[in-house]
Picture 1 (tube, helix red, strand yellow):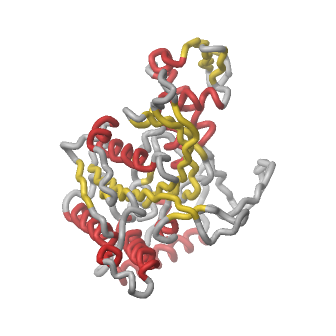
Picture 2: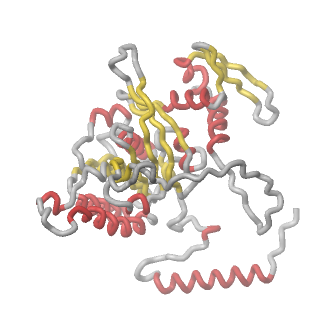
Picture 3: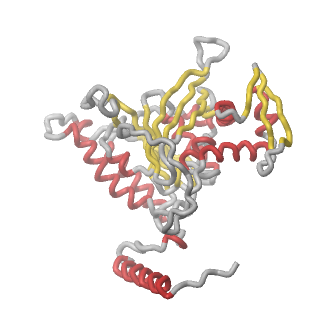
Length: 392
């Protein structure tokens, strides 16, 4: 097919845009650096996501990033929110592990003195190499340390991925709170003001670095909310972190995973809803199992997904997975298995594993429609539009 010839109008528009970019950069390059880009062919623009860090859960990775082998976007801010014991710290710790798997450095800034090195080791975090633990109880010091990390990485190796986990925002106090200066005017709102100022600065710094910043934040009851009017829960420290975050994930504990001893649960099932997403469609949900002795059980979570979506059918203790030709629909192999054999009989086989991941991506990944100025050819109907209250 012959290549479309560029019109004189298109050439003029391109030339004018290039001139604008050159003029803007000439003004700011000395003090700030490059600030204007052509997004179509630029890999250096702060808005570009060059890499991803897995959440530790395959379905959640796809739900967030809208792609396979995705997860949290590097260079962005993520907030994990939820009630106590919903899996926030655990999910953040898995990001540390996944960062190390990519040759990066994991850093935990602990405000609650609640980090367990035994549990971090159990889920696969290497505590001897590429791991830093920082303990702070004052929110001003938390943000000061984050700035120091960014400056150090900028001065040393900019190509190394760094994940910083602040666990948690709620656990940090202000200097005035620590010193007991409650008689000062506005001390109750001071934390929110400090966070707001810091977030404006950090957002600009992070966009140019290979650093992922994750905040965990606990939901608390919103005393100002009227019954039946809006969300009855809010987060600590005001709205600044949520506003500046590219991704916000709300975690809800859905149930306990019982073992042979009914009074000794082995873990919990958690549902994650992406209530804000700037790199993919929001309001996607993913469920995963958290085992108390080993963290996220990704294989088991995939098994539950296949069952819930009817991709794998069940009869008693036995399941059936039909491995089909994706073009013709012809069944290549029908595999019967029990839950305990899922990994050995299915997921460890490369061709079956790829087929399973393709089924998950078919469910989560949205293909964007490129518009050319007309609506011709777009026959996708809007089936239902549901109005909801504003999210957290």
